[in-house]
Image 1 (tube, rainbow, N blue to C red):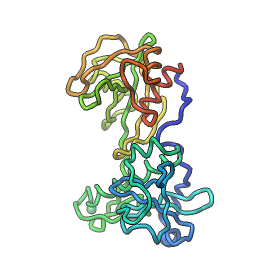
Image 2: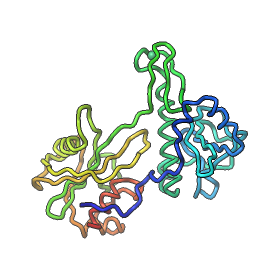
Image 3: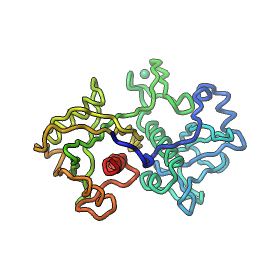
Length: 291
Ligand SMILES: [Zn+2]
C-alpha cells in the first residue's frame, strides 16, 4: 500500500467554486462589481505573479484588462475571484509560465493557476460548436459554452491520463520518451481511451509501451495537470516479469530501479533524474521510496 506524505502539485485550492452562483447572471454581475472582487490576469495563459514571484498578483476590476473573464470562486471572506485572459500591460506583476508558477507558489495558489489556465485555454480553443459548427458564447460565468444555433451546451474538458509505476520484487519501472532531457526518466503514462476503466488503461499502456503484463492495479492519487486539461490518475501495478519489449515510437529507454536507486535520484544524486515535486510522477516515486 502506498502512503502519500507529500503534497500533490496543483492541488489544495481553497476557493469555494460556488456553482449555484454561476447560473445566476444577476449575482455574477454583482460579484464582478463587488468592491472586494479580485482578478487574476493571465497574459497568453501565463499567470501574473507579484514582483517577488512568491504569490499571485490579484488586481481590482478597474485594473484588469478586457478579455474573457471566468469566475473562479469565493475566498474565505466571501470575496469573488475571477481570471481574465488579457494583456498584462501596465501591471506590476510578472507573467510567469504556469509550470514555473506551479513550482514556486504555495499549493492553494498553484491550484488556482491550474483552474484558471485550463479554463481560459478551453475557451480559446472551443469558440465553435462541436455539434453544428456555429460560433458559441460563454455561459455560466465561464463554466460552459452554449450554441445559439442548435442549442447544444458544451462543458470544459478534463482529459484523464493514467500514470503508473509497475512494481516487481522491490523494483519499479521508469522510462524516457525521445523528447526528454538527457538522463531524465519518469513513470509511464497515457490517455485513458473511450470505453476503458483506469485499471484497464494502466494495463494496456504498460503492455503497449513496455511489453509487460500487469495485475493488481491500484489507484494511488490524482492531480490536475493544466497543459491543457489533463487529470493525472496515479497508479501502481504488479508486473508479471522483468522482461521488456519497448515501443520505440513512444519509449526510447526504460529501466528497473530499486528503492535505494530511486531514493538517490530524488536526492539529486542518482544515475538518472526524475520529474520535480510538482509532477505526480515524483509523488509516486516518493511513495515507493517511503514504502
Ligand atoms: Zn451548435
